Image (cartoon, rainbow, N blue to C red):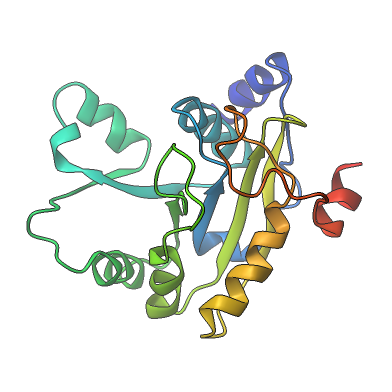
Length: 196
């Protein structure tokens, strides 16, 4: 599937960086941004497969009906009962602590609509599980995707989110103007040098 997904992505015109994968990706909170469309899930899953990175993600248990449930599980989906899980970050961090290797996939925007403020859950999950945050991306403007650097939370969320956001400056989701960082006047220098 790894080779097949690489070929399909190339056929669709996507350039996925399958080489520069940080070693921290084996156990991390893996961000996925921009997230503006259901298409992101399909392209994103194909990209992760092409990179050889296994991920898990939480999704409401109501979605696990036959045969969709089997497909979701095969893709790394874990059911969550929102009525009985009161502390999502603790629940997610406990899952990470019980695995030697796990990349916990999260879309920090938390919605496909425009969200000017990212949800903080991903940050606190990483803190509680004592793992880094790896910056995954899929930029529809350049049709490039992959993983940026690993970021270690310092405990100062406001300062850290500014640094994390810089990596995504100038990237674009499938739907224009639904990603709150796409209209910044410049992209992060590290992103520019790696992708020019």
